Length: 268
Image 1 (cartoon, rainbow, N blue to C red):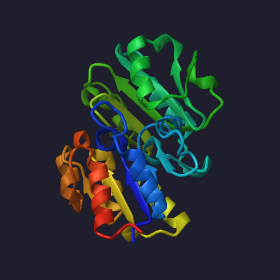
Image 2 (image 1 turned 60 degrees about the vertical axis):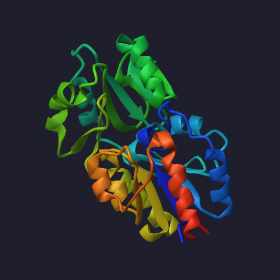
Image 3 (image 1 turned 180 degrees about the vertical axis):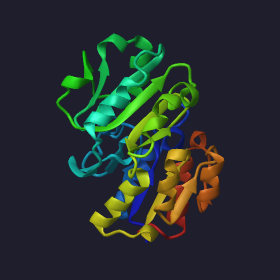
Image 4 (image 1 turned 90 degrees about the vertical axis):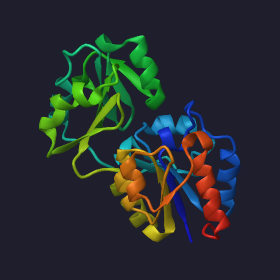
């Protein structure tokens, strides 16, 4: 029986307008009744996930920042902290490039630089980081660094950001999470590793887990559960890796996939 269901957010659970699908609350209640835990598994900040899932703070497991921060009942289950000196160096790499912005992602919040605070950047930032602070310098931040994120307003992150950061491949991993964003994290962390940590701490096996994803940063997540679902709108590699497929995020495919698991007698 399935005990834990995980879902990516953007392009997966959220619809084309970035909203939770109609019927989510009813599905969450049904899963709770059946003793199945739900876990958002996203590149978004923990506090952003809390805002999206207001009312579920004590029910869901939150796998945030692409797996670098996992919290349950507002307590840390797992985290992966970057070498601060090297991370700070990476954050300097794109500083002189117009249209590219840096985010210091900490355990307590996100931080952006005052001289890069623009309306366009703040609008984009709020989609993923609702708990953010404007600072004069990253050097004075009293917080642990778990991820460095870089935003390219032109939507060409793979060519405008990645080349500056690829030198950090090895001690870190440099991952393009969308056309606009590149993330720098420890080389040995991803959504899959975070899921494995949760499975270990809660004594849950991959056969007792399901996951829904759409993009390349969901690859390891697909491999960490048995019931892996690719969205109809997913990247071809995700469709190749996943054992099952569901409808697109526009058609509320996550809810359809969960309902199928229930109908097949796999949830409680």
